[in-house]
Image (cartoon, rainbow, N blue to C red):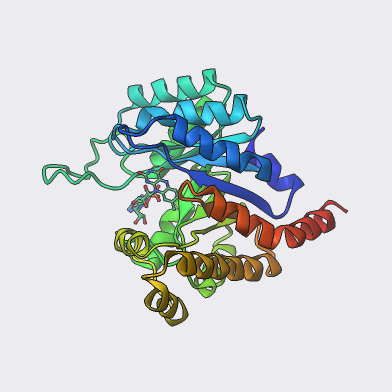
Length: 297
Ligand code: FAD
């Protein structure tokens, strides 16, 4: 099923994100994760794509397992920056052969190689180019990434204009980068409405349960860390169980506020930790159930 069609039937849509295990780890580890996530019946599970890296081939395999064995809708991430049209067509063919109907079309982070140039010669310089290309195929529902705090390469306003181009190219729904302060999401949502972006926007929420994880993520995406959140990290950094409890409570609080404000959906960055996803789903299940019921009437 196309994810855009799930959005027409359900509000809120709840999904999980997982990533392929490192090549040194057994593929079985991710199947254990999916085994634990599946009974939570998310509307879909997305699988990240390691741009040009060694885990990239696993994305199709894992997404196929989610769809064809667990009977849960799958969203395969796909990055364009390091590929040409022929290579992307090959991956799209594989996805199609595996019955996968949904693709999250991304540019990908720029390669670390100092020789790399973001040039017009690239087939997919920006995600919008990849979206246009996938659209030609007419077989996929296409998701895109968006950034409530702006993207690191541009100003907030430029990024919003670029987002309009991506949506015009054929994106069916959006998932946000993680944010720790909901006001960024509400401000962003208002701006998208003013720019006539009318597709569903799912809020990406990452429950932070370890200090190194948050340091790494913030350095990658530059999210603002609210004081309330810093206090939690400082107080419990040496007590993993307390930090986990506090991280789950913080994410739950964010999600309840978003749900109460009518968000289209929540995308939980599970970090392959099913226990955390389970606890968040349990904390919010009666609210999600009530909202879904109200929407269906
Ligand atoms: P784009 O939409 O192309 O935007 C990239 C930058 O270029 C932005 O600053 C934008 O404003 C600018 N831009 C866009 N179009 C134009 C234009 N026409 N002219 C000038 N500037 C322009 N990375 C992975 O490697 N694998 C994953 O699986 C993955 N999953 C992700 C999932 C989500 C939900 C999110 C939010 C991010 C994910 N990423 C992933 C990270 C993503 O690849 C990076 O954030 C990347 O830097 C930007 O990707 P994008 O698709 O948003 O790019």
